[in-house]
Image 1 (cartoon, rainbow, N blue to C red):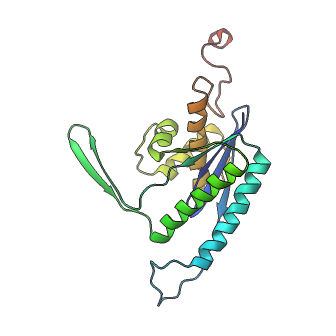
Image 2 (cartoon, rainbow, N blue to C red):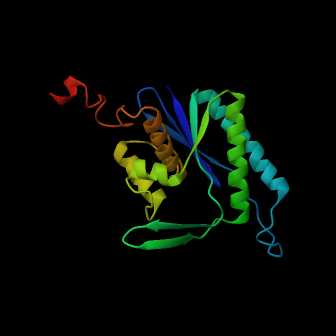
Image 3 (cartoon, helix red, strand yellow):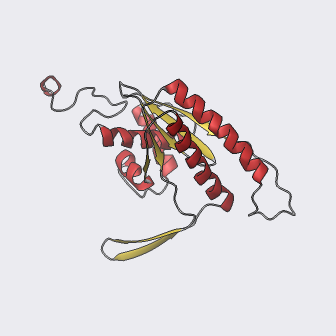
Amino acid sequence: MKIGALDIATTTGAAVMDDDGVITTQTFKGPTRKRNILEDEKALDAEHEAKIGRLFEDFVRVWLMDSRVEMVAIEAPLPSNTSSTWAGKSLIKTTEKGASLSAVYRIYGMSMIACAMCARFNIPVRFIHQATWRKDFLGNGRPSDAKKESKAMCARLGISISSADAAEAAGIVWTLNKQINPYTPAANGLFKLPPTVRDNVG
């Protein structure tokens, strides 16, 4: 079963895992525009956003048709500003600086476009929280630099990437595979047999 994943952001990473567990990736980057210095930096340009949305829809359509994936995972969009309380030795409240208004607008819009395009092809979609795939792929749900660590992990696993976002998409598809096939060997791993097979334990 071929599965895919999207790490949707201003630059979007896409990853596909084939039936043999090999991961391939690619990257979508929408056009940028020069902003007038007199313009409000938080202002949204509807015409520009529409252009990006149109190009992204074309990208997803071609990606789905070419890859022939049967399921897709998307990193769950986060609020623009997040705070959480979690327990360690003591309760700690953390607040993370959010993305810009245009980035948040784009991420949510592109996520909906991707879901709609998958629905058009009758491909099931699920959202995966960033802490979930980071824990599965990197061993830490709160890494100091997820992009850097994802690139390093892909290098160790022999996964060719075209961007840091593609590396994160590889982590998302890794987690999707783990969720739907919890007893299969790891993607691009050294061992192709599950540990319960007698031939694999000598």
